[in-house]
Amino acid sequence: MMTDPFATPSSPVLQIADGIATITLNRPAQRNRLENNDLKTLLAHFAAVNQDAQVRVVVLTANTTGQPKPVFCAGYDIGSFSESEQDRMPFENVPDALASIRPVTVCALNGSVYGGATDLVLACDLRLGLKGIEWRMPATALGLHYYASGLQRYINRMGVSATKRAFLSARPFTWQDLEKLGLFEEFLAMDEWRSKLELLTQDILALAPLATQETKKSLNDIIAGQMDLKVLGERVRLTSQSADFLEGRTAFMERRKPVFKGH
Image (cartoon, rainbow, N blue to C red; front, top):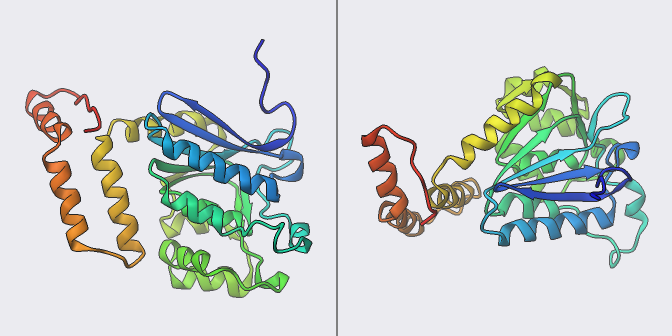
């Protein structure tokens, strides 16, 4: 008899099926607040999917069952800051690791998001949002200077003006505010959620695996200001000589869907 992994609160749950790894935050009664053990679990999940060649898409989402208003994540547990440096996991390790994993990452933001959890959303490659949510970064309202890689991601994804608004006013963004920034594929009503998420993941799975993987590396290098033309040129050469590129050209001429092998 199969047990329901979401029947009781727990660290984030990893499920893998048909090339898609779904990581679900699973403390709905605590608004999916992240504790130190949750950070360690997320890092372990990222490492696991990175090593599994069958996984081509990672979906990050949350269990919002029973919440009066859906909250994807209320951020890092403030109480954990009282722990010793030795015991406390640096939060920035998690979004940094998420941003660099091999599969394409999709944040299925099915609730409001606060604090450090906003950086998890930004660390993903693509984002779907739920209508009615809000987004708030209260670091300075709590007396905290945010870590460097998080500030860089904010500026790269949201732009300077929106980043300054987020950190220097601590006022929330509505979903309409976020929509104007162009951060999200789209914002959806709950009844559209599952079908649109499935459509997006299937579109990603239909891409050539090698070309997608190498292009993601190059995009991340360029965003980080670490573009190396020789390295990018080698990636171009690798994909242009691949069996997948031959299959893609052949399928185009034959007016059929390509069958990619990832090499």
